[in-house]
Length: 231
Image 1 (cartoon, rainbow, N blue to C red):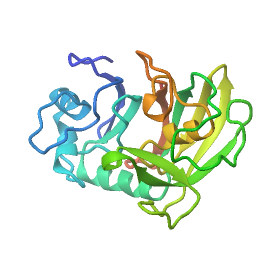
Image 2: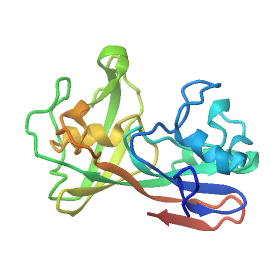
Image 3: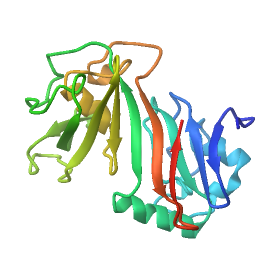
Image 4: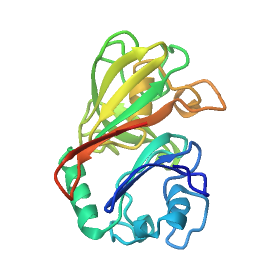
């Protein structure tokens, strides 16, 4: 159901809300008093209960996870504190499964500066896992780079894994549990298949962006039922 703010509600019950974030808007405001156009501010206009839970940042309310500004798709909110705490615990235990459709533009054998040698399979033709640590890269750490060295400078020190499943054409379904900033974008570029519109990681310019969150799987905190929501 589409709301007056233009945000589509994909699923809701008394405890949770899942919406479809449009591409090219931030997920959350940048400051506690920020009134900019972002998903949290648009959603709170028709469902103020997303601001009831108190989490890591007051301005994010019951937001469970973020999407990059250019990325569209499913975003999960809790509507009360108990539900929020349960979902955050599930996320920390890698029990919230997220799937994305990654659309690549052109194969690029020359990786962007700072990428190590790619050691895995061809993600456009075969399914498998791509894993790495990540380190901040560039001015003010605006980008990331995969690394196989856990002790590298500015490295996360945590191993992040993306399951890659070929969907057909130029589409790859990427499945993650824990996620790092730009994880799928960087892993796709590392494999030589930067996303459509992702010029930061070597992709061709486009009015669209080739990453969409298409599925969420988790346990409903209220009754313990397994939920899988797709778009």
